[in-house]
Image (cartoon, rainbow, N blue to C red; front, side, top):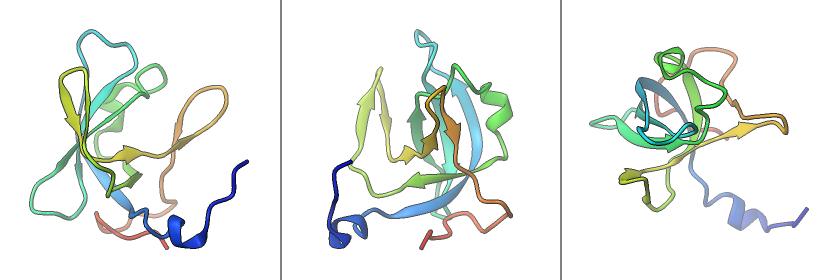
Length: 108
């Protein structure tokens, strides 16, 4: 495990978002394209490689943890504006709060 400085860690803007829409990306069995409410003016599009373990319709309404301040990245013709956090060696398990919080809540 590589150690990073605390000053590097605090640059990551971790937030809770609510999935408003989720669709499988055509041509990919892994990518899911989501519209995520982060308490901003409009939902944010984020793509995640979780489609082999999650059905898109099961994600709608779910609160998940994202890194909100990553530079946009293009994946299969769609631009992703953040990263969904997930854990697990056998497959991704999306990180979620144990109680509902307001969309856009910061993680400290």
